[in-house]
Amino acid sequence: MTLDGATVVVVGAGYAGKRGAYRKITDLGVRLVIVEEPGHWSEALVAEGIAAAWLPVPVTGDADVDAGAIVDALERAGERPAAALTYWEDSVGAAARVAAALGLPGNPPEAVDSARSKIRMREVSAQLGLPTPKAQRVRSLDELYAAAGAIGFPAVVKPEFGASAMGCVRVDDSESLPGIYRLVRNVVRPETDGIFRAGNDLLLEEYLDGVEFDVDLVMEDGERRFASVSQNWPTAEPSLQETGLHCPADHSRRAVNGLVDLCVDTARAFGLHRGVLHVEGKCTSQGPRIVEVNTRMGGGRIHEIVEAVWGVDLVEAQLRSSLDLPHVLRPSRRPRCAVINAFLHAPASGRLEAVPLRDIRAEGEIGVAVDLNVEPGQEVVGREQIFATLLGMVTVSARNLRRARSLTEELLRDPPVVAAPA
Image 1 (cartoon, rainbow, N blue to C red):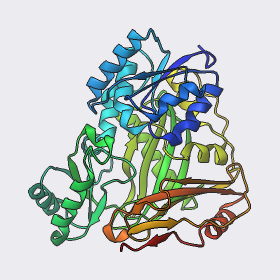
Image 2 (image 1 turned 90 degrees about the horizontal axis):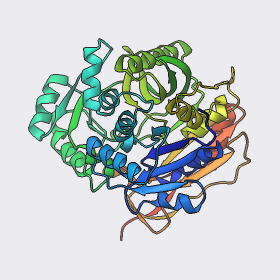
Image 3 (image 1 turned 120 degrees about the vertical axis):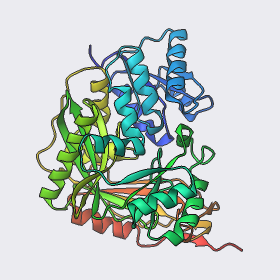
């Protein structure tokens, strides 16, 4: 088996920003088949010459139901893939089941499920004897009060399923529980985001102090083959929305190494023995702690950042793992550059008028990349309403972290312009 000519089915294409990853798959010689719900943007990848085939399959959010429908669709289309995988959080459960049903390499569905449910992840971690923050499932305001009595403050309310910190908020006292519960319940709905089709239970868990990191792992036969660490900037509390990150990390090397070891131990204990994982964790005053385990490649431009800094292609790494091929990783011993990924949120509610960005000199492999989600004239929500509208993000590479910071500060010197509501 080789990459060249292998038929690979991608379960769930996700957002349009993943187009570059799919183009890279095709460039590697793979015959790409995409399975997505009807009307999805990814159907256009066939006309663009990126995908060889695109199969429409309704998505319910029930991984067993969706996987069965995908297997049936592949059979009807005469597709016999050599690998089934996903780069999209919403589809990790279905993709694991498709791989298992077709006898293809992959992590066990039960291990993927245990990691994906943030509630189950805490329960399994505690059962395995891993250092685990206290957490309880919450289905009502009464249960939220009860959980707060057991866990204490500060704490974090978050959805069982989710991504990009949607519905995640810090709570500091009992008086704020009703308002926060209503706020989060208004976010955690399938109408808000399809990821909540998998379920809309909440959890209350112990707040973790310290510095947060993204740890991108490549696992093979239960062993770590590669790890990249990006250091997250402080979140926009009380919401836990991301504000940015930089790679490589510049925190205490000893503390970061301890967190990476915990990430690997957690993956191994859960039975996640292969593939690319995106694990989020913190170096706290009590030691390293896991925030969440994602059984897929990191989103956004993470794979580009990792390749720019370390010379490792996570897209290819996931492909090779899913095809049961040996990895050909040759990570740089030293960072080849530094990269900053800064998130832009609406500073206030109203109508977006402009996102002014200064001209700066591009440096490094990425240079300057701008990804905007909102067009001028659209209504946006500001920080005063807790969950601010994400306007977009900018990614800047430079020869070192100091230079990357300086360039990013110049690029973002002028804040977004929002006109107050009439």
